[in-house]
Image (tube, rainbow, N blue to C red):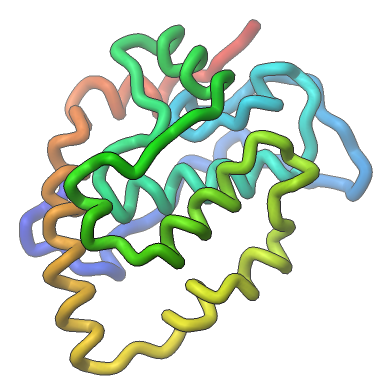
Length: 172
């Protein structure tokens, strides 16, 4: 659970237990990953490193809203939603998220992996570049707007659903 006094630098991305070295041009066919973050091409058993860009989009969506873009009551429902690849920004936290941030998420969650930005392109995105330096006034506004997302993240059924998702590897 997220503590109410959590700071930005308290959030960590973890669980790289299945990470492996990737060689450019390599195609992978093993279906593994954590359900919330898995890319559709992984479910179709034909993917490369672009699946990580999708996962980054999911992480960013969750960090800005506190809810996952392809949620479901079961892993099977989540997988169906991921395979559809449709998501929206029709949640209260996104009312205060900039168009640039939503556009960036949309780019990262592009269904066709060949049309997604590469990691090198992603770090050059205007939302990333614009937010690498933030004024004190912007920092205060960002913290206030992020409070709602952090509260939602804490209520993201972290107790059972998140534990299950982190411990379950998908195998088909």
